[in-house]
Image (tube, rainbow, N blue to C red; front, top):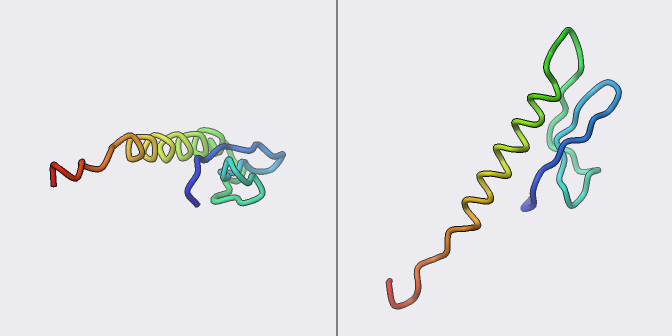
Length: 66
C-alpha cells in the first residue's frame, strides 16, 4: 500500500481503507459498548496521511550536495 487512507462507516464497524481501493481495508473497528470506533479510525487515517505527506514533501539531496 502506498496511497492515502480513508474511513468507511458501516452499520456494525468502521473501516480504515486504501483511498485507491476501498475494498482493500487495513483495519476494522467494531461499534460496540460505547467504543469510539469512528474516532479511532479517523485518527489512524489522519496520522498515516500526515506522515506520508511529510515524507513525500522531503526532496532527496541534489547530486551536487552529496
